[in-house]
Length: 182
Image (cartoon, rainbow, N blue to C red; front, side, top):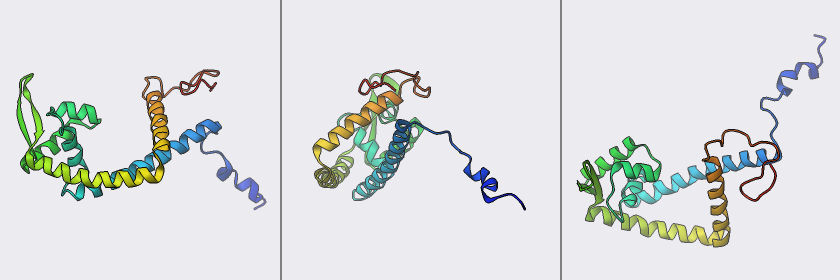
């Protein structure tokens, strides 16, 4: 065993991932924070929905039809959820008397889902709890900071959703966020 420790550690010391730029590191850290935050929001949503005797999935679908009836397909598109998942939850809402299907004058087969009076009562109960939660958390963070963060997330979302977002931008290209060279 004449190999030194340094020589034997070459496997450990080799880079597993290629080095990113500082901006690439910042984006990666941001993505990880947003993903973690998504988990916290999901847990908070489940807790709020539970106060109305519902799950987050049921609350999301009820909320989508609060102002106007909608087809399962349109709810799925607006919320970015698989149509089959929306259909399953919508059928459960109907079964439990929280939603009902009405004929759709624009389409013979795609019925319109709307909340029943009981569904509206559940939505109201959850909304009261959500208001208290949002008001307290919003005050702790601050309206200006939240609006700034929302604008940044929106701008990043627009860039990420572009068809060529998986391709690195050419050297010297300008950032769509603020005109900086990337």
